[in-house]
Amino acid sequence: LKRIVAKPGDTLSMKRGSLFVNGREVVEPYPVNNDTSTASADDFGWQRAFLVSQVDSPSYHPTLNTWGPLLVPDRHYFVLGDNRSQSEDSRYDGFVDERDIVAEATTVYFSRDDSMNKVRWNRIGLAIR
View 1: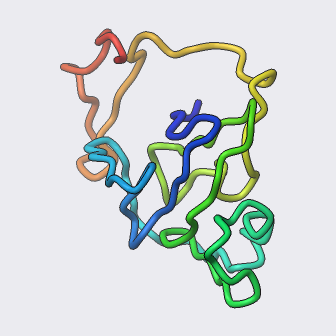
View 2 (view 1 turned 120 degrees about the vertical axis):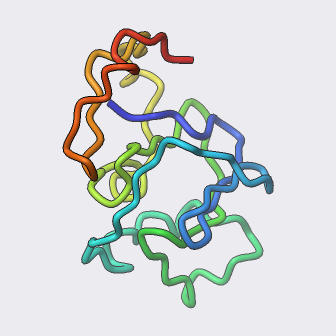
């Protein structure tokens, strides 16, 4: 389950873990980012083909938390997992074709605070906006 953060025609980037869509920072209270990743620029090499024109591709060295700006192609979406440091999402796998989107989450089924190792009972059953 991933969150769609950009749609066709959007330009997006991440700077030190903050997401920017069409030049504006997206306020995201939900992601968890305990950056323990060993990802390298090679993991994100696919991004070079989608860099906006003013970025010099040979000097582009993306990381898990700093990359872009990328232009989302027609009929594709960019998705991110909320557990950012553990999520195999569009940063690694590229854009998601609209034909591959099969469902939409509507309700929180289960919620746990990993830092406290406790169930967040107040979130279970909430509608997802």
